[in-house]
Length: 285
Ligand code: PHE
Image (cartoon, rainbow, N blue to C red):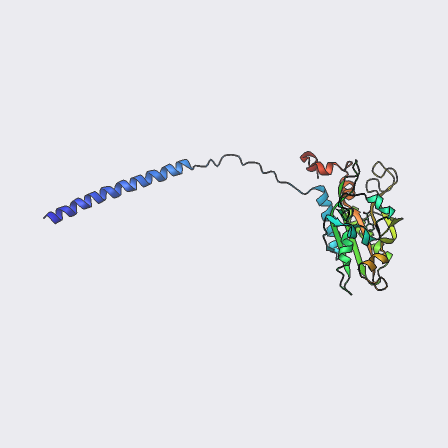
C-alpha cells in the first residue's frame, strides 16, 4: 500500500515539474524571438563601392595591349643601385646626361630609381641564350621636379625586346600598333630623332592630338602633336655590359610616361589632381 502511494506521489510531482519546465522554456523562446525581431521594412544602408583610379585604368590598358602582343610583365625595386640605374645604362659617374635625372640619393651608391630602365638591365642580365626577351615593366620613379606637369614621384612603363635580327621597323610597328590601340585607329605617330645614352639610334614619339585630330588646340599647345614616350635600339655597349653578345642579339626599348597617357586619355589638365585623391575628382572617371 505504501509503495503504491509513493509511486502516485512521484508521478504527480514529476508531471507538475515537466509542465513547469515546458512553460518556462516556451516563455524564454518567446522572449528571445521578441528581442531579436528585425524590421525588414527598414531601407538598406547605401553601399558606396570604389572604382579604379585613372592612373591604374591607363596602366591596365597599356598592359592589355602589350600582353596581347606576347610581352611579360616584370618588376624591379624602387630603391635601386647606381649600377643598374645609371652605370649599366651607359651613364658613367661623370656623364652630363645624369643631370636630367637628378634624384634622391640614400647613399652615394643607392638611390630612388629615376626611370624604369634599370629593369631592362636586370632582365638582360637574366637572359637565357636563344630565348627572346619581350617584357614591359611598370612602376614608380622619382626625380627632383615639382610643378603642374612634373611630380617628384611619377610612373613609367618600360618596354624591352631582345632577339636575333630585330630592326627599327619592328620598334616602329610595335609602337604604332600600341598608339592606335590606346588612342584610337585614326592616331598617327611621329618619330623625332633624340638622344638617350642607352639606345642608339634614339627617338621621341609623338601622337596626333586626339582632341583636335592634328589641327592644333589648347591640349597640344597648337602643334597638333603630343609627346608620349622615348625609345630606341638598345645600345650594343649596354648589351655587352649585361653579358650579351651584340653581334648575335639586338633589340629595342621604350619608356612611356604613364601620367602623360592618363592626362591625355581622360583630358585632365593638372597632374597633381591625380595624387590628391579627392573623391569629387576621381569619381568622374
Ligand atoms: N628612360 C628614359 C627616360 O626616362 C626613357 C627611355 C626608355 C628611352 C627606354 C629609351 C629607351 O627618359
